[in-house]
Length: 219
Image 1 (cartoon, helix red, strand yellow):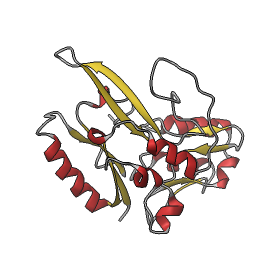
Image 2 (spheres, one colour):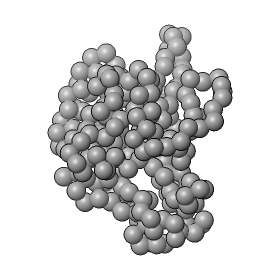
Image 3 (cartoon, one colour):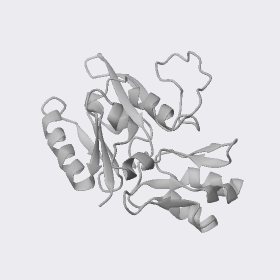
Image 4 (tube, one colour):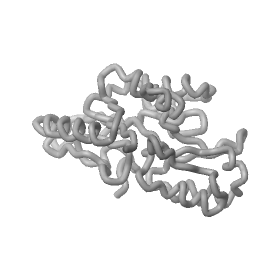
C-alpha cells in the first residue's frame, strides 16, 4: 500500500515552514528574490524549491477579501505519466518506488535529450518537474524517500505547526481526509477533496480549485 499525504489547506497559515524545511533537508541553495507584489516567494517551483506555498487572493460574493494558501509539490501520481514518458526515452530514468509509491528521478535522467525533458515536463498535469541546468537533472519532490524508508515523516509534514499535513498509509490517510472534510463542510459547504483516485498527495480545499492555483487539480 503506497504512502499518502493529506494537505488540509483550511489549516494552512502560509508560515512556509514546509517550504523552508524541504530546502534545508535537501540542502538546496537560496534563490535571488525580489518584491513582486505578492507574499509568495519565489514566484514558482524551481530546481532550488521543490515545494512552495502559493498565495491566491480574491473577493467573495459579499466583496470580502479571501486568501487561500496552497502548498504545492509533486503529487506522486498512482499512475505517473512522467515515469512512462521518461522510460520510453531512457529506461530507468524515472521510477516509482514500489514500497512507498514515491515517484523518483534517477541518475539516468542525465541521458535524456532536451526534447525528452520538455516532453516529460509538458506531460505532467500538475506542472511540477523543473530542469536543473547545472546538474542536468529533472527536479521535484522525492517524498523525502530517505526519511520515509527509515520510518520517518517527510520534513514538510514533520515541520507543519498546525496539523495541515498528514502522512501515512493510504487507507488511513484517506479516512482522515474524509473525516476532516465532513467537519470542514460545516463551515465551508463547497469544500472538497481533490483527485483522491489519481494521486498520493490529496488536498482538502475550502472552495473550488480555481481559487487556489491553475494546476490545483487534474481537471
